Image (cartoon, rainbow, N blue to C red; front, side, top):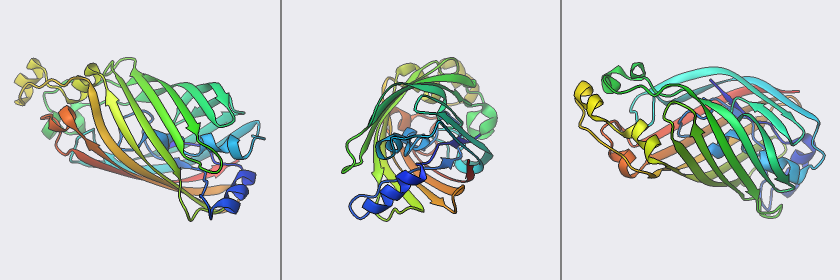
Amino acid sequence: MTAARPLLSPGARRFVSGVSACAALAAAGARDASAQTPSPLGEWQYSAGVPLEKLYDPNISTWNISVGAAMTLQPRYAGSDRYRVMGGPNLDIRYRDLFFLSTGEGLGANVLRGPNWRVSLSVGYDLGRRSADDIQHLNGLDNINAAPVMKLAADYVISKEFPLVLRADIRRSLGGSNGWVGDFSAYMPLPGSNEHFFWFAGPTVSFADSRYMNSWFGVNQGAAARSGLPAYSSGAGIKSFGAGVTMAWFLNKHWFVTIDGAIEQLVGRAARSPITQQSTNGVFDMSVNYQF
């Protein structure tokens, strides 16, 4: 399962290259991850660069389409000490500054927008968690079924001169955990970017309600009896802190390669859960893409 996001137009990339000595402004590509499925990747990494495109190139094409293939190395579930490799196709289709279909952001629309901000509403998919993901540690625990996820997100760019992107989002699983989870994040382009190479970095803090936390990190009495783990409940609060880096290389007019990495630190009740085998998780992914 994969994620994708569009790139700045050639005109915007040339502008970015011209000011990179002051503050590198960048675009992003695509990377492999299950859309909305818990991952150490920051939510901003699913759409890095998108809020900057219109700011630096107001004449956005009617259609922006990119396709590709990607792989990711990530934990089997939040708090796992075992990793797995996943792979699949990338797809990102955008119509003006209005509608999008992306394996990263899902199917959605920018319901409110301005020159340096947007508010989007979308639906994605959460693969959940099953005992088969790690039979040694999850045997006897309740499965978290795969389910659609509704997401409301807002991005705001400070200015062209200081291209810090502030982002907030909140997501609700329609099934599965049946809970709410959200993020606050900030990221910006880094020095060294040019017309052919771009990179971003930034931190994220994630929070969730008690239903989400108990689905992923709680152990009810029945599951405790079946699994041998102690009963455990987790209330609403901060779930994790994290940081990520996103990079993109343009090989020519159409082909580009992306690499992403991130680290997530579970905190509080999530970190102390008997389900959590390792409170610090990382992720690495790479993709090769073609932009029409």
